[in-house]
Image 1 (tube, rainbow, N blue to C red):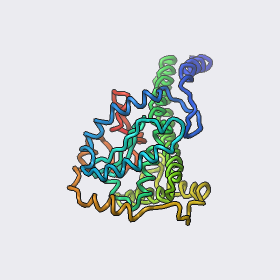
Image 2 (tube, helix red, strand yellow):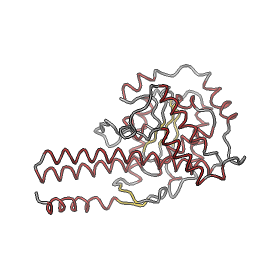
Image 3 (cartoon, rainbow, N blue to C red):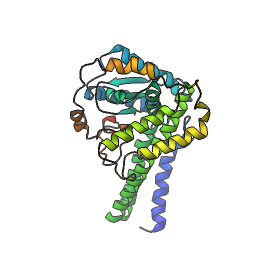
Image 4 (cartoon, rainbow, N blue to C red):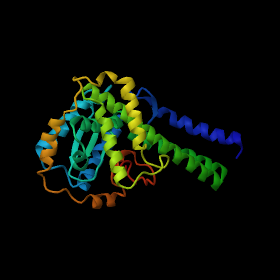
Amino acid sequence: MSILKQWWVLASVLVVMLPGCIKNDATGRTQFNVLSSAQEVEMGLAAKPQIVQEFQGSVADPVLNAYVVNLGMRLSKVTEGENPNLPWSFTFLNSDVVNAFALPGGQVFITRGLAKKLTNEAQLVGVLGHEIGHVTARHGGERISKQMGFEVVVKALGAGTGSAELEQLSGQVAQLAQLSYSRDQESESDSLGLRYMTRLNYNPIGQQQVMQIFAKLQADAGGKASEWTATHPDPATRIRRVGEEIAQSYAATQRNSKYKLNEAEYRTTMLARLALLPPAPDAERVLARRGVGLGLWCAHCRVEGEVWPATPLAAAAW
């Protein structure tokens, strides 16, 4: 195929893809997403029961569940555009897996394993705000759409040239681009999380503290992988970047009693009650079924080695 013919194929593909470009209310950027908001909601609601079942249900303490739901719903109300009207739900999973993640359309999950590692309410709000950011930025639909788009381009070029080498090269470029974009999504959700938590007068340092907790967990687990091949930005990178954002955009929140950490409230409402619960199901067994490693914050962004399921959405693999 000539260079001109290759460009014609790409142009034809782009014409098909362009109607999916929309401006996001939360991020202000234009993104490619072939899914409507209603479709994202439907997909998230359909996937939720499987997630809850695989994580052995929600925590059997109505006070703890209400605590997480209340904080999550308060955060959802300070999001942009039509996002406050999404059918938000916040599920406190009965698992010692250290994780949190979100489905498109407003389904947010956090495990008791992660909650036990936190030390104040601002940290919990930071985690929930980060996951809400994935929803409002529509990262789930965007990633599905982006993968679909790359596959269309790769197949079009491969079919047009008959070149296995070109198809393989295109696939590698697509994989690298998606991995890099996933890290961009993480940073974007960090920023949105900071925005939402400060709107409720929580000290954004809480989110940086969560990253410091994960850095320690990673160090205790024997170190870190290369940042380029990791599924998330290196914790040290995130700590530094969030610290810079706090200093530049949220400096007024520091040494300001208006912006709280709520350590005592968290110890009393969360940690003391968690200590009274029976042990959670075995974390390693749960994760072995998912093929996910321990200590990931936001399984939503897992890319490396990812195998997408036959169904359009199964956040169990994210």
